[in-house]
Length: 174
Image (cartoon, rainbow, N blue to C red; front, side):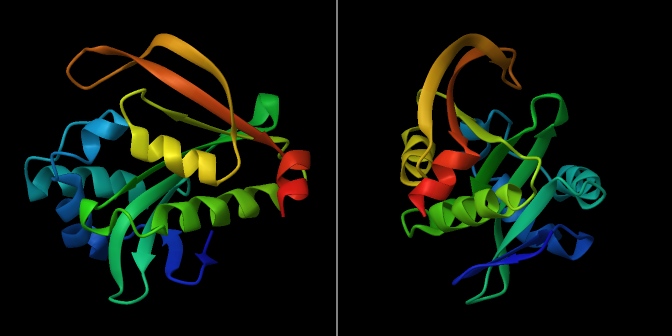
């Protein structure tokens, strides 16, 4: 999948993304908001980036202005329910510019272009108010809270807030 927005390219990861990937993955306020520990070395980042590069569900967010990978957007299919779950993360130097909202809206639009997709789901931890705001701006509705359903890298069970938008709701919002 390659998507172009006003300020971003959303495309598969490749090994050349390593330095940019490590830059945001090592930031102490990025990974924990998504449930993973900050990367401690370039070698650790390379291991994960190699997996991402081989996985078409993982996409790099490239800021057009400087051709820098500033984050990721994952698109995970739930074929049984004809749904897609989206996960995302961004370099903290780019927060507050509306870039993640721009990316998530473009990804939602892309997944709904597939006729079989009926729903898009996004989850966030209750403490992640920035992610909640992106979800709200993208028009999803809060449907439930799940208690202790995510085990963070340190073994802590975290609650998740679950949001959804149907194909029909997305079409109406456009």
